[in-house]
Length: 126
Image (cartoon, rainbow, N blue to C red; front, side, top):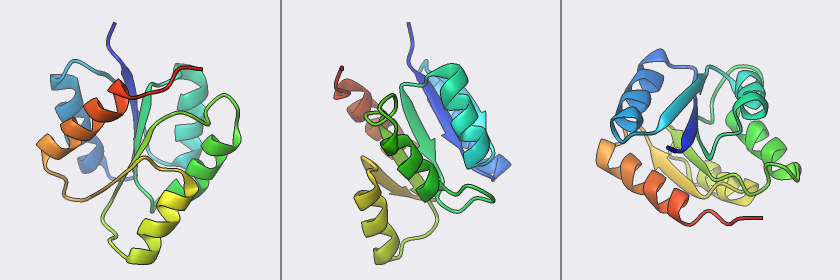
């Protein structure tokens, strides 16, 4: 059975690109356009990994990450932050909030594939 990956980004182009790269690798991809939709997809699809943007309307990526880490059900869910913002303060805040990986846009497909494989192979079981 393939892993399910949730992609959360308010850019249709980014979602389409990430979805295509991951589906070519055999993963099942579920999408959301903002943090609120992303949290709903986590509940309904129980993904094995989340790839998400930081800057989104409503519940942004950092808030979504904090909510995931605050729940006993999702505290170990691996998260890759995929963002166009490369400020040092944003990177530090992302790590402190619990992201396992931080990639900048535009992300090369091989870098995304590598991080997804790395995180899925090292996901702890409860």
